[in-house]
Image (tube, one colour):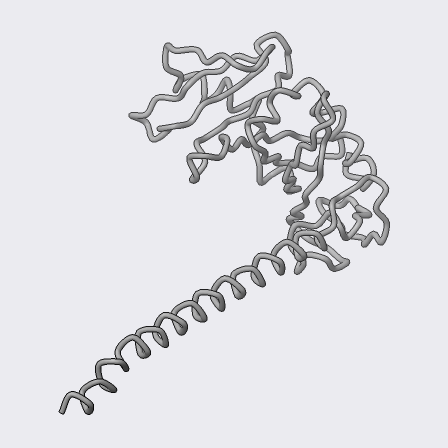
Length: 224
């Protein structure tokens, strides 16, 4: 009887070893799959073109009666890369900070009738919603929080208090608390087209160079 029970008793460690080996194999497989996805994402990011003023391969689009010549690498959405008439153009450009850091900016071009400038909203809307507090952190700009009670919770406005046509940007907290605030600024271009700029709040530190650099991109495509 004891001789018959030994094989059964000795088999339990064997089955346990098999289960452990299977678990390790599954873990290794999961790690390999995860690494493959990571490599694929990294390679996809590396393939995405970084917009440059030297980009070629332009297409012609007409907005607000003005024909623009826009390099295809500047478009935010592939479905917009087609010639013809349009009422909205979504682009992505990269400015440069004083320390050489890249400053990504999303640009939406619209007919003037579809937008109101941030400077006009400052006097007509924003100033009536400011709290008594003042924010610090951007040299040359005044930062004012908006009143939470009126639906502006977590929002603030940064503006140049000296200029007759001030730099004005409205910012709000990002969905991801670890990311900087997201800001929006709307201007009218000399061409009559409206431009809506969207960018991280970190770009505010280079606000004095913002319009000068943006003019280069807009002039390059014929929008200025």
